Amino acid sequence: MEAKIVAITGTYKGLGAALSMLLAKKGYKLVLGGRNKAELEKFTTEIKKFSDAAAVVMDVRKKKECEHFVVAAIKKFGRLDLLINNAGIWKSASFEEVTEADLQEMFETNLFGPIYTTQAAVSIMKKQGSGHILNIGSTSAVDYKSSHVAYGASKAALVGFTGCLRTELEGTGIRVSVFSPGGMKTELFRVKPERMKEDFMDPAFVAEKIVEHIEHPTDEWHVVLRRPQKK
Ligand SMILES: NC(=O)c1ccc[n+]([C@@H]2O[C@H](COP(=O)([O-])OP(=O)(O)OC[C@H]3O[C@@H](n4cnc5c(N)ncnc54)[C@H](OP(=O)(O)O)[C@@H]3O)[C@@H](O)[C@H]2O)c1
Image (cartoon, rainbow, N blue to C red; front, side):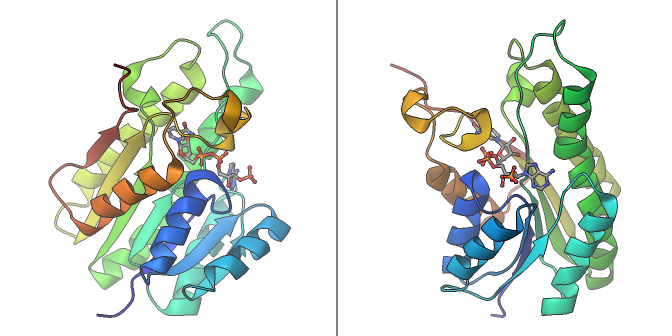
């Protein structure tokens, strides 16, 4: 079988890095998006030890850069089978304290970015008659935590976007889904891993669950993976 082509944002650390590495080891070919050129190039060199890959410096808040990122997959590999909208940011603030700048940054990164990349990918996937758009959501979209108004709302909107798009693309051959993990040991919260709650998940474990979701499609279009409950 021909290798599948994946474009993924937010690649060189956290869940994006774990997922990219796992996909590369499984033979997928990757277009890696990231906004820090040096970190992206270093990570791409690591990925290339396992599979073919191209690096695209991009900020998901910029529509033109999102388009360029998706087109890079076609230029390099001639097709795009899977788009993973993984890049995201988190900031905590109570409703009364949340700033306009933080609201804007979270919605631009967690919602508008995935919409921009998806707009570019859908036109390509429609011509192919196949493809998969996979958004990385969060349990914050469904568990309604305190001080999560901006982050939780941006991820809930991402889930809503996914559901609407899925309905709109029925019959095109394009699969649309969202995978919402609970807390993971990454730099998202700008807290050292040793200071994080013990039951936060290893991103490598979550990456395995996401690859299962990619490789074994079911009718479940919104997968929620919560942290294991304390006994
Ligand atoms: N960690 C958790 O507990 C958790 C739980 C549920 C869902 N998630 C979701 O999982 C995804 C990955 O997060 P993570 O935990 O792996 O966090 P992370 O380690 O902070 O990684 C986030 C990645 O997104 C990139 N990114 C942020 N803003 C960007 C922008 N404007 N343009 C391009 N790239 C950008 C970051 O790049 P820079 O280094 O350049 O900022 C980084 O590579 C996010 O969507 C997050 O919301 C995380």
